Length: 277
Length: 210
Image (cartoon, rainbow over all chains, first blue to last red; front, side, top):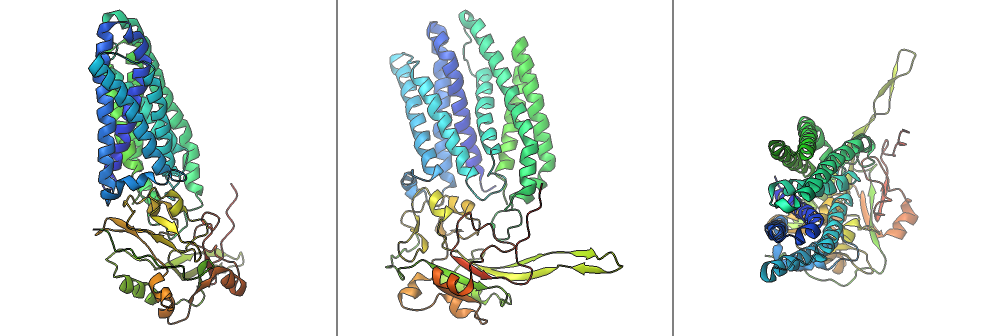
């Protein structure tokens, strides 16, 4: 698949922003308990590595990476330039916060919300890159829903998989954050589903659908993957419900199984998103 | 290795454009082949492309017969060096740029990073990846030939005289303003420097109401 680097890049960066979002929610209560504070460091490092790795993988998409720095030249009108700028700012702030934590063992809680905001702006730019093209399946607000949805879903999964708020003293806070994550995941899947009829109607009436000069055939790919799409939605809905119920009842197995289903569905959705030929 | 990029001074002080007489085009693809040959393009890359557009159908008259509005015609399209080119707007490097004066849209390969965003953006399919160089490439209106006072190769080659070029305002004054025909995207997206004499059946249908 030609766009594999972009699939990995978008998911890694959005996952990183999701982790930073949940770090922000966990930072203040964790900062009061030394054990809980120490547990944040691996999560911060994972978020940094995911974001950094994503940026490195994105260069594999470039045909001539030696000119990569030129991609910052058109911030005035290109969403791609803007995306690179905000991704850099996001990683710089998150990296600074992680470095201080690593070296001085100090958690600067004020930096995490700034990193989250920069990350969310970056995801906006990332979505706008695709929405401002002639690729019919991308140029719709569904792109924003899928990308922001991945931030919430992958962040919630990171909360389960990584040692965030796992100290006894903050057990009640963890429970609240987990429940919030469960509700967030269900809300994301529900909003995405509610947008699907409008998205389908847009695809059916797209003004570019009869155009012979378009170099990509996204509608053909969209129809070709209709079975896989239904499967992905089923996996996503099941994963979200399992995750939310288990988050409420503190069911460890359900949380792990729900997380796996959610990650699988995000990868499948992203795979289909990038199939345009 | 980057492709060789050579700057040329403006070949006109007015926006240049193409006139395509689709009613005359036989679909021989001489323009496409000449362009490929002149630019030494590999398999898959075509700066000028000849599309076949077909549509319409048969309808019962209600009196035992059928009527039809079937059409099929060929349309020669390259870069339209648009007044509002979405490729230059979206290009993150400014490699894709619109020249002052003649308004020709070119790729500066000393800047291009080969991200392909211009190819996703252009509804006419003009920017195409040069796989060997890893950079984008496109119709440059044969600016090298024009600098020598010659015609673009597609114009010079067309055996039916169906492709003309010149300042777009002069082409519009002479041939009209039509550039929205069946098979092409809405001209409001990029404002192409293109005038078309439509083939029978090429006029756009009204979009059905929801």
